Amino acid sequence: MGMCVQNFIKFFILFAFIAVLGGCGALDAILPSSGTYKVNARVNGSPLDEYSFVSLNDKIQPFFEESVSGDPDIAALTVFLKDARGVNAGYTVTYSLELNGEYAPGQDEQENAPAADSSNQDNAALTEDDKNAGNEESENNNKPNLSVVISNDPLSDIEQYKKGNEYLIPVQSLDRALHYFPLPPDLPIGRYTLVSQVMGKAGSSGEKAILHKTEKSFYYLADAGFSFDSIQVNLPGVTSSSQIIPRGSVIMLEAKLDYDSRLDPYVVWYNGKK
Image (cartoon, rainbow, N blue to C red; front, side, top):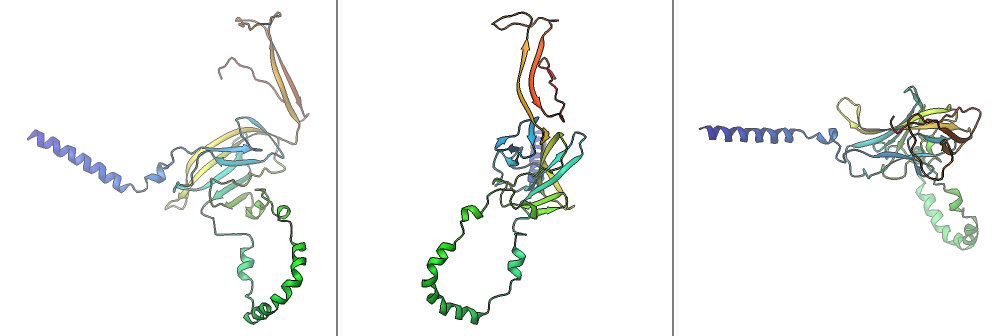
């Protein structure tokens, strides 16, 4: 009898576990299918390191280190800045997969343009062959140089997506090269944090869940000049070999910095523990 009861309990627990899994169809929305998302940013093509220096003309471009094209949970990537007090500064940029196809530059003008009259099209077709022979050479000479007209700069058309301090940019894929993150021309010099939030699809409440959040701190120099050459530690005495610094020794720290008068740089030296 006891063995039957134990088998029944095991069967009941297994059945309950399967029932719970079957009812949790939205687990992917809570636990992303791709695990932890790896979001980073490039500055002029190089990865943004913690506490890097960023200048006015530098180009910041967010990107995913690993492909997310097959992840059904992601709806957008939102990027913004926070100042040293934790207050949002500058612009908020949302690269949205859900907005893709809803708006295209010049779409309204193309849809509202009147259709050409069919009789005019027939007359044009009759005279087209007669004109082609004489106009072929002139057309070749008047063709624009597409390599000059077309620009592949991700900032070339970003202003059309601006609404106040927010940019809503439709993208076909978050794995492709995203538009550069714009820095306000009047952004003050100081320390900022670049916040990247992977956004999920809207739930029943209409709000999108934050699937992942990444923060990278950097120092914004604006147009101020700054260069760092080296830091040297001078020990007592003269020696050509490495020395162990005994406790209580007096050493001299020498740093070579060239900076703008608007900056007040300093060097932090510690024993390996923060």
